[in-house]
Length: 460
Image 1 (tube, rainbow, N blue to C red):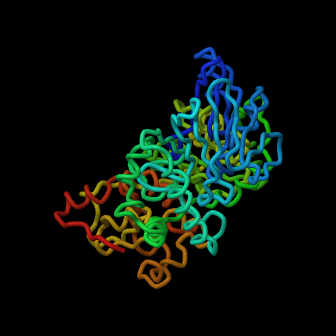
Image 2 (cartoon, helix red, strand yellow):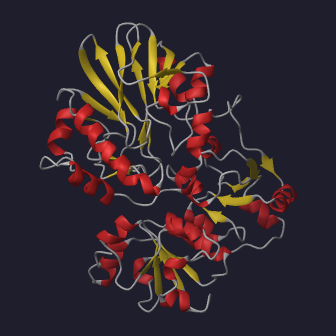
């Protein structure tokens, strides 16, 4: 099962006797239980390759439905589980699960090899080895990054590459994951294919080469990654019944503001542009919603929402809870129309196309460094969206630029990403901090280049 927004995969394995194994489940147990039921299976085991930083584990939820949690003993989980050491075996009733210690992505990381007798069928590698790369090694602390990168090399060379070429590789992290480095667009592979084509291993890479390549692929990651490992290690609370989103009146919404709640507008960006509650944060509900919510809004913050009439409230709740946001106060009943009907002011932020961009206008590109390096508008300023959550909402990265030196609001500012969703999020953050001459570019660099006839600049 693939969580596109986080770039992760979890796995339901039919072990052949009416029971099933789930690898690295996310918080909501219903998809796994429903799929198992559809196949006339019972989820008997939930196996964790590592203590996750990017999502709340569903292991305790599946345990509440009768599954045995399997994990590395060294992970120090604070709830009932079967703790295993390197080489430990789990009898699945015909098939066997073998534990391989593969530290690197996290200190207590393990991979699980699925065995049919002596024959290995597949390996669930978590983040130790992914298709075209490996997972980042800086989550345990910046000063230990190289240490764990070297451990990752040994895990790949001595443990995973010791498996036969035919063994299927099923990683948890993949394309779109902030845990991944140098990942390809594929989610599964084989040991042989990675031996031949994984860029980290190319040219019979030695340890130093592997480490240099791995660390060279590290980008930034969401702030909430620092909070979730402790939650997952202790054991996430059970949510029974699964929460729903309460309906709020305008008066209740104002009371929530007084309580310190944040207001997140999840409508499509064109609707937010046309009119929104002043000070609200635009994060369009899409698969990537959860990553940006976790990156830009502190865990533990009470949340209220403006939701479009046809948007999926259950999906909104699922994504919030999946990354640890649990204080969901509710949504304004009737949405923005209720706000307007109450006679309350709305703000707007214009959306423009590349052909409408004034050549003299200042441009703020808020994409990731990896995107900026491939191609950007010459003369544009660059700050990653995640860096805009600070008190000034322009960040120290711009202190030496004309953009920071310009009196706030005195010059127009066009904010851009690739399709407009992230740039509207950035614009709503900037508006909170007094920037009122804002525009959001619907288009990306390619559309701008086609409209202007100017080739993009490359490099940092």
